[in-house]
Image (tube, rainbow, N blue to C red; front, side, top):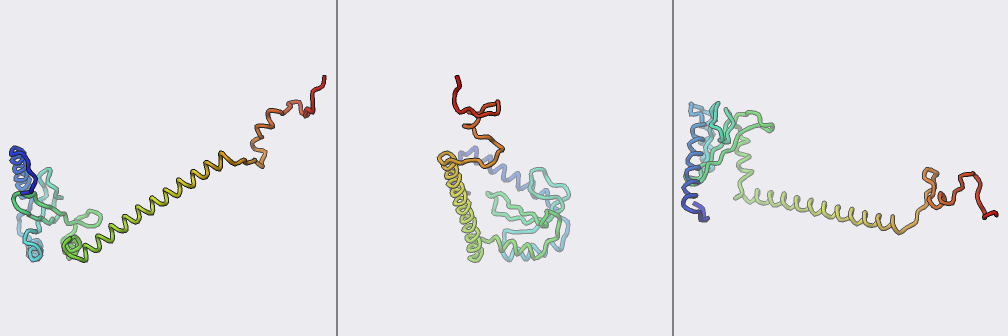
Length: 185
């Protein structure tokens, strides 16, 4: 079990849920003879004794993360740990028969292998660099926006089009068409 202490009632409840889940998974497995499944299970157990390949029944127990009729990888970490289930499917979620791609994906996700650790570290570094570039771009945009605001409020600009008349000219505009030069009495 884990190093986390939980009250005995919760511990019993978790153990019961794990046992119930395990039973539901095994009820959802198609146990009919399948040479492809048996061949892959033999090859998978050379990699890790805890991994087997199974095929789900056409009807699975609700709540079990299995797709009816699909092949799945089942990793059993022991009675105190829930089963790990991975669906074997195509790129768009369609049904596919197991191929060597299963082993490629297993090796690609093996975090004990140095090559994969370096690849994951490179991906994380690239993600972090992208975040930093985005933050720098946002910072530059904010600085430019502030400069534009300051310039708009502190610099005088004169419109060279007649689309909007000057406000200072409208106040002194004579609607009669003549310009006043002074008051006549």
